[in-house]
Length: 398
Image (cartoon, rainbow, N blue to C red; front, side, top):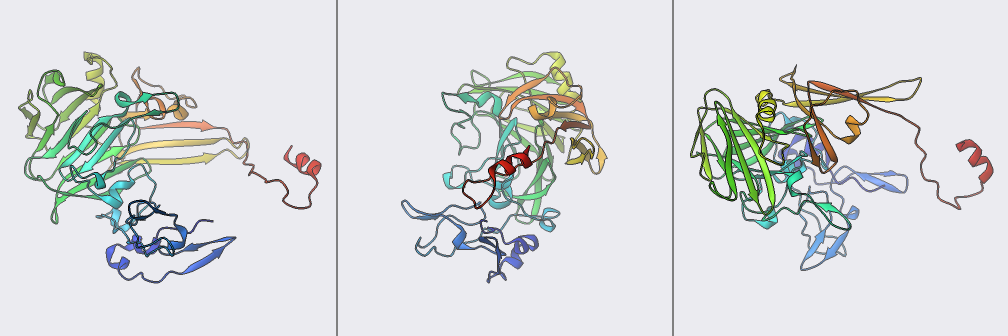
């Protein structure tokens, strides 16, 4: 068993506790062990223009030596309440937020993207860069991948959301659920902007606490950007950069105005809430798709709870996804990935996108269920494990 890379107690209680966790307690488990803090013996080490360890992102990669492995430097998670009072996990699609916070524009050592598929986003010190995964996917003989062009810029093949009053901010993990994450940007100790990303959703939900929203594109109206819709509280923008064509519908609360809509920097006035929708269209969205995606845009979601139940007679597993805001159910355009819609009776809209997980279909609902058969789990049994009867083993398996 690989040693646990995470000082669980220290991460639970924040930076103050981190400074006090200096001695590891090692618990033997099978042929391995579990550590209650960073255990350098659990890392692989590499010498390549420096000495580096492979890790889960909770330590800095550089160490003094490989033999023995030098003491790693812990990262202090960037957390605010309520996330600061909850376990801090690694290996989530939003993991760079908790351990890296914001990625500074132009700094290749600060790269990190979150992937609320079909959207990918880079949380930066100026806000967030948002791109559509479907438009960027390219296939070759061995793989399908989105090689993000110009990855360290504030914006390139999509759209960036920032703040008129603050050009340098720090990003913190504010909250998370089974299928969502909320980021809070601060100027010093003052919260100035927040965004909630939802796995599978076409929407990103923004709140501005100080200043006004800005929308940034690579270019003004022309061959790389244009306006396909502007009416009431909504603005539709398309971008076409590096062969990646995206359509975004922006919906503002209250009575928003979009100043400079034909330029590459748009200021949104009179709106404290903003929802950015990645449209599933590959050509200019028609009135029906604008109406559908606009209809649910301001139905903010802050939690996606995922639960399951097992039928004791058939062993079938039913999984439920529930969308809510401040504890109340919310009807939204939920994204069903192939494992979901292939095993569900949930009615879906005609709209779908090609995501990193296959075709995602959208359903107007506050929850959906899907069912999976359970046929048992058979661990791999290596050969020559001792004195046993192969025929008897086969009969037991059968």
